[in-house]
Length: 372
Image (cartoon, rainbow, N blue to C red; front, side, top):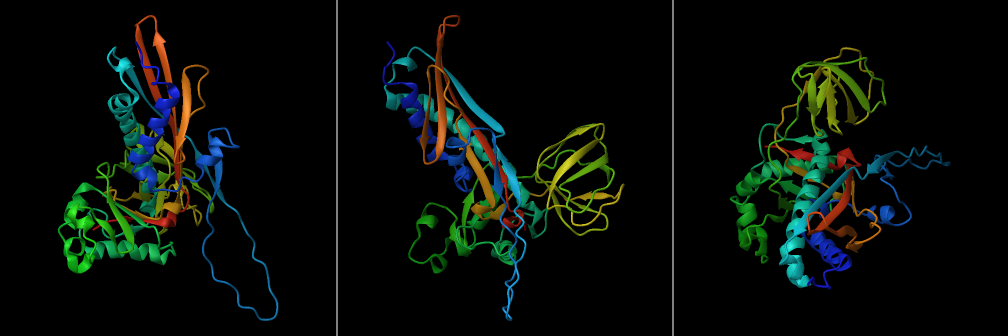
C-alpha cells in the first residue's frame, strides 16, 4: 500500500529545500527576480534594467545642468526547462517520506542541480569580454589572481561579495601556494586550510567547480568576414565565410574585427547555416564595421572567472502546477514542481520534478576571465 504521506506537496517541499541547499553557481548570482516571475508576472520573460556606466559628477559653479538618463534593459528569459522523471518500484511506493527523499528525490534533484549550474556557468562566460593574463594559460599564482582583481577595480566593480570560480586543476595549483595554506597568511581561522577549501582571499570568495575546464568556441574556422557590415550601436553582427556549412558558435566566444581593438563576446549560441550566421554580441558596436571586415577569433583557453554576483540576473522558477496530482513548493526563492501519475498501461507510478531556468549577464564589465 502506498505511503499516504508521500504527496506531491510534501515531495515538492523537500525537493525545493534540496535544490536550494545543493546549488553552487545558482547560489552565486543575483536571483532577486524570481519573485517577479512567481508573483505579479506570469510568463517566460521580464525586462531587467542594465546598471548605468559610472561617470564623474559635475562641479557646481553657480548653476546646475541635468544629464540625460538613458535607461537600457535586457530580457531575462526562462529559456531552459529541466526535468527528471522517476518510475517507482513497488518498494519505493511504500517508503516513508524521509526515505523517499533520500532514495528518490535527492538523486533526481542532483541531476537538475547539475544542469542548472552548468547552464549558468555557460552564461557567465560572457565575462570573457575582459581578460586578465594570457588566454591559453590557467591561473596558478597570486599574481594571476591580483591581475584579475585589478580588472574589476579598474571597472569600478563593487568590492564586497566578489566571486572567483576556478576549475579543479586551478584549485590544485592554488592549494599548494603559501597564501592559501600557511597560517602566516590565514591568521587564526584555518578552517579553509583544514578542509582544503580556497576560502576568501584577495577580495573574493574562491570556489571550485568541476564543471569548469577547457572552453569550447564551437565552429569558428574559416576566413570569417562581416556580412553586410554593421553600424555603431548594433548588438548583432552577420558573418559569413565559415568553414562549416552547419554547426554552432558558442556563447562566450571572443573576437575582434579588423580596424578595431574592441573585444566582442558572443552572448548567445549562434546556429550556422550555409556557412553563415548572425552573432548576438556585447558590447554594442562602437564604430561602423564595413562589409567584409575580417574577424579574428580569440583562442579558446579555459573557463575560470572572477565576477560580482550583481552583474548577473538569474531565476529558477517552477511551472504552474498541473490540474491533478501536482504541486509547487518554494524554499529560499527557489520553486520546484512535482507531478505524480499512474499508468494503467505500464502499471507503474511516476514522479516528475521540473523547473524553468533563465540567466543573463547584465553588466559585461562586472567580471573577467582569469588566465595565467
